[in-house]
Image (cartoon, rainbow, N blue to C red):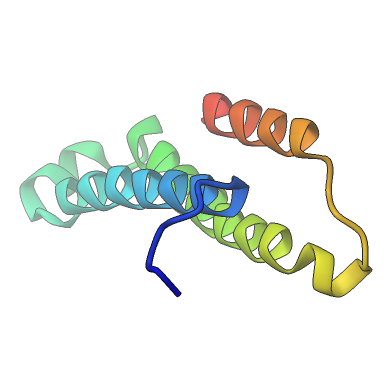
Length: 94
């Protein structure tokens, strides 16, 4: 109750979620402009925007929930090493 943040795996996934959401938001702002949308239609830029938005942001949100409630759901603690490797490989893969 002292208000100190515990830097653990779910918090690091939340930070990566915010990063993915910010990047996807900026690319979405470019796509919302009519003149740029016409020139970028059917390009890999649009594909990259949707992949960052869907797989980057949505899946990271699911991972946050799984790691946060893992002990309550399964009754055991997850491996911190494999969890951090999961975060590094997933974030670096995007």
